[in-house]
Image 1 (cartoon, one colour):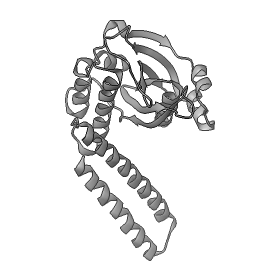
Image 2 (cartoon, one colour):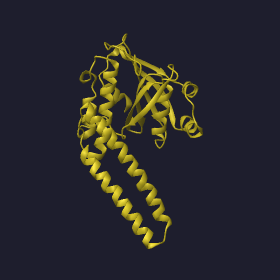
Image 3 (cartoon, one colour):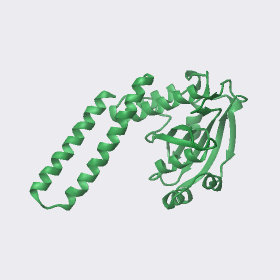
Image 4 (tube, one colour):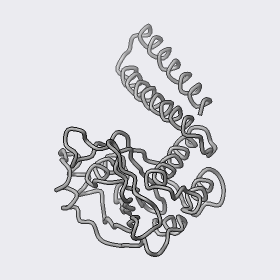
Length: 250
């Protein structure tokens, strides 16, 4: 399925690389905690650097300023054995590679895509800071209808801006965020830059409300006091109502 999705990006053959990325290389380029190390060891079957997009392989210009350095884009495929820690894996892979990375995960007959907002570390110009990383839901790239189909069609390379790597990668990022939003709204809709930033804020708020609901439900299971149960259920409903309102804004 990874290959099926990558084929639908329509990238030039000159961008193909197809090199193995060792787990050791990743571990040497990023600080991993105990859980990260376990995920790297147990949850990943193989990693391939499938494509490299740089001026010598595609007609796109680098973008470099005091905050950003988008001189190239790496596309990696990662075959997952267990999907539970895929978000954690995406985060530390983005941190390990010092330029823009587009990650395509494969599990069973589905894929998930991840991108990240990165900037130059002002305290150490040789390092990057990952401000946000984004991971789509799992999907079948060969589906012919619905949000997934719209996302795949919209991600075809010829539909992306070729002015700079920042613009190209930013367009991919906006499409990934649109697909994540579609999980809540039921429809894929690419937004303007300003609307995408609002959408990001709404997604962060939904995540926070979801975490609070989980905590409140845990407390609810542990209490036998009717008054406390009523209070907790009221709080849970408030968070659920807030999520519904946020979804309507996306």
